[in-house]
Image (cartoon, rainbow, N blue to C red; front, side):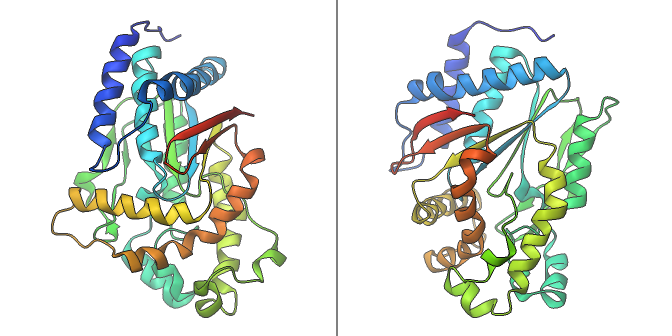
Length: 305
């Protein structure tokens, strides 16, 4: 059994330092300590209880729309789990398991041209992702490499930049916009929901393939999740607004590399719209923890299911 730490001041110090590093001009975090006490610590306690009960690596899914703050929350939980409960945590994104640009080019020629754009189910290397999660859970642990994806070049990083996990983790936080998503009924795919679907997927091939992927390969992956946390946006239009902010952050860390324009972002999120809207409708019964985000990008309320 892991030993608990009781030094709240240490947690507070590391948490505030990390929050400060994530703030950009014109965008600062509100009620920092209130969110720590009312959201992050209770969630961390839930994760700790799950780990203690099962006595094995806990897989935590963290889901929510584009630019909502999943990576930030993953790292906050990692800090608390280490300082309060002495739990070793590995965090990564489903985005890091995107297929290579070359593989997506092949898929765009053999299935649908829309699969060239990364993001939707079908554009991830599901075999690699499933094997990675199974290895992280395995009792007999050996060093694991977790891939990294560079969005500014739209391709996987070289292996020397991958994350090397040397020690068996107590907790794995696996985040992504579609983590935990469920397939839709086939008849719900017929009506187009945006210009992208209406003009570029007239025969429904792209939609049907995505749905097939969710029913099969992705379901096997998501079934490994012990606790699913869902971050719920007020409405889909905020996905666009916050994705623009994400691009702004990427611009700061990827000097000289290609960043999407506002127009490109608007089209880009159309690829994500169908599943995002479906998850917003089903979030209350697919998640173990539901966090509502307000229009100012702050945590508004939390519900443990």
